Amino acid sequence: MKKVIVSGPKCPACLEKKIITDQNTGELFCGNCGLVVTDKITDTGAEWRSFSKEGGADPTRTGAPTSLTMHDRGLATIIGAANKDATGKPLTASMKSSIERLRTWDSRSQAHSSSERNLRQALNEMSKLKDKLALTDAVVEKAAYIYRKALEKKLVRGRSIQGLVAACLYAACRNTETPRTLLDIANGMNIKKKDIARCYRLIFRELELKMPVVDPVKGVSRIASIAKLTEKSKRKAIEILNQAKETGLSAGKDPMGIAAASLYLACISTGEIKSQKEISMASGITEVTIRNRCAGLRKMLNN
Image 1 (cartoon, one colour):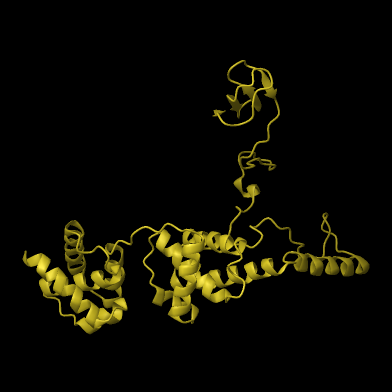
Image 2 (spheres, rainbow, N blue to C red):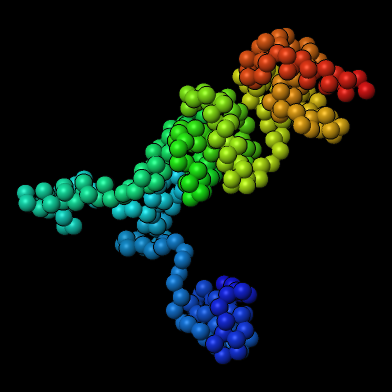
């Protein structure tokens, strides 16, 4: 496998930037004049060697992948709890006390500055909320990345960790198009919705985040499962939403609000008995908003 680097280092002979990496031979050579720059390059791939008698690839030796959800990205070393040496023999009494002191200082040295302690606490809060809101690893990874950026810009100073963590998670949900509202995250973190919104506006402005437009269709299945609606009503609601998107009626409207209204109209169309109050409780949208969105959708369907 050969990889050409166009904007990398220059060739010392012809001064061209066409350096080619050959992964099979481990050589770095010029594609213009053929000069071998180096014949020993570091293999950055996974270590799939096996030291067992059977032989073959053993992916268990590659170790865990690095992750932004850990404050040290999973690269820190840990002194194990077993008081045994490399050969399996138990340690002496004097060595045990030395190892115990080393364990203590090892755990303390992993977060020696205030920003690292802040990051460790914030990532712990994220992992708790991940289980509460049933979020995927990709969403939490994105939220950890946004929080690290906020920490670099010193946006954390003077603000609550919980509010900023919730704002980062909401931003990650928006970015990955995961249907979670501000109210869901506020209930999960047990803080005010207003505090999350304030922190979200701050990181959105300072970090210059680009958010995709939320598709209301993604909220239909969530509301339908909570309200225990049939598959027929769900499909009818998606048809109404697709028609609303084509006519431009859904532009600028709250996605969950228009999804709840389309589900209510779909229930009327399919003959399923569900009140506005039940749809409102399932979606977290007020009955007044559902009625207003229904009025616009009815006009569109009549035309």
